[in-house]
Length: 582
Image 1 (cartoon, rainbow, N blue to C red):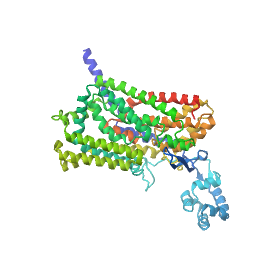
Image 2 (cartoon, one colour):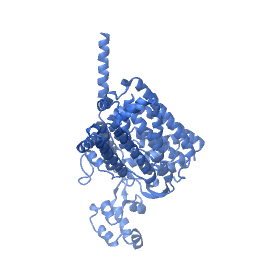
Image 3 (cartoon, rainbow, N blue to C red):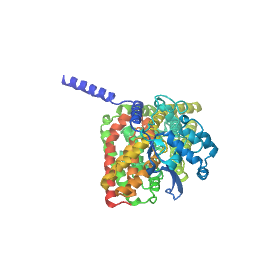
């Protein structure tokens, strides 16, 4: 009877666990709705922007468009009477009109129209954009009694009626270009999926995994912390993120075959890269841009950051190994044990009959993979390769692997078989590609990340930045870290977050008595660690899609690791403030 009750209790707990783990799509949809509601509550604000020059990690001068913190203002309707008076005065100032490159006749024609039809878009057509008007008149030409909200309609498109919240998926998918989210990352995921579809069809990965395990004589577990350090170095040196998606496709079956779970595979690849990103002393897309915007020497404070990198990377690798060994000893403790059955069964089925064979063809395909991965790292570091080049490189890798498989008759590979395998690989990651667009939609609902466009996100940024004044320096430094961590839940681009937050945080640091180096440190720690957790990270969702892990299950594991990493980050923030890091 007691045993029967325990079984019922276990079934109930299992049912509750399933009920509490909604699909990633459902989670993002809920977040989208919450963000939409916030736009009804939080008024829209904006900043003027300008270009600043900075030296990158290679000493090359570059420019970045950043906001000017002192120019924040809420969005208001025009006070038509005051605007009319101001424009009438401007129409008589020929010198100013020439300086502004505004056609006097066009301005006169505008003034002759019905005031009821006056709008900012009409003024834009004659060269009087909102930043120009703000520079001329401040907020004296606006009705400041009522703040406006930039709230999406329920339905609509950019072309008809404006962005609508229920169109967040399509609009999210088509944002950006081939160099970034979402279009570029979606294309990368699909191409990489197809390439690995061919490689997995050859059986080379499974054959290599078993060959490695047979020869490692039980020492394979020590391979994990070494991999963690390598991926952490990738994050520290060149901001490795999207590049982890194809690596995860290799590591998931490899780690599962070793007796661990897919959570360990994602941790040793993507999480490790973000740990390195957070503790980096030279990441050109993160710390270098932030230091340039903060107007402090590029790569300054490197000795402090190198020590921080070593401590945090080793501590995080240790955290991973404690979890990994617990799972190795009792695999059923894993939250993704049932999900990983897909990979266990696939490895078992594809290696059956060839379990003891590691053929020359298999070795050549793995060599092909190794050479392409080296080519990618070299291209990213030395030649500045990014998403388009990486996608092309992986396509080449898959094509060469397929040709080798045909020549060596691996798994009866044919040309049609290659095409079919590519199609299957694309199909496997199509759902992941959709998630990338969904995640981007969250940012669109908040009004986007353009500082010059009135949005609730800009208001949140301004309000949080100025709420930190008047506190002890160590508290302010820590709150900067907290703020950057929270901000990264929505804005996951390192360079984008630097452009939005550092123009506010750098001068705020001067006011509250911490160094600008501390402000940069708070930025990099916050923008790095949280990227391994937030459902808005296209790269994270990409690697989770590879492993077939629901974000909710990932969050249950990662929230504990985030607490551990946050504690480490807090310690280094306190040390930096106490020592006056500069």
